[in-house]
Length: 221
Ligand SMILES: [Zn+2]
Image 1 (tube, rainbow, N blue to C red):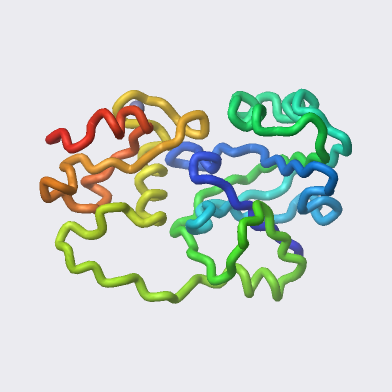
Image 2: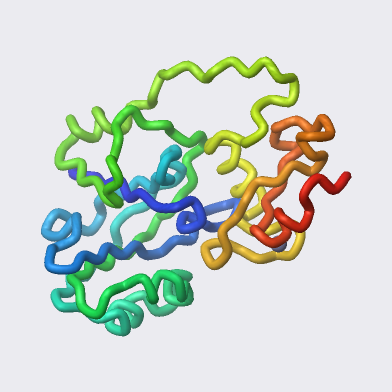
């Protein structure tokens, strides 16, 4: 059966500790039909992948709409009730008229452990896996060994899988002020700063919005 991989910035794959709450994905292209136009059906699986990071969640297609010569306000009304509806940055990034695909999701769930894929998406935001062979080829975990880090604190910057664990534990909310994704981009902050010996491990990491992350720079815990 056909499956899909949707690639998004981490803050667009937000939710609570118990489940993702994405609800809808849109694809828009000027003068072209965006992928997966004509290649999507209800009940198909959509894997949610971070751009430059692992697959962290999956869902089923509960419905979709293909809209030719769509306007931003038309598309906006098609996603009423979802977080995307209130993302001003997204709406202002759209051109006047485009072809749009709206993909509604249900049965959203986090993966027990995120998967680093072998395959590369080369900048595309949607990959159609037409059959079980291509699903198997794409959804294979990369066996590339993680680099050995000699520093006892670990890497200064948390790897994507660890960032995901922190975001999920914190339900995609800044733990200082409560701002939440997808409206606010989130960062992973060291509680005891790395520069003061703080380790890059989950118990020393916390979700922070840009403002709190910058404001807190190297402040002792
Ligand atoms: Zn904050």
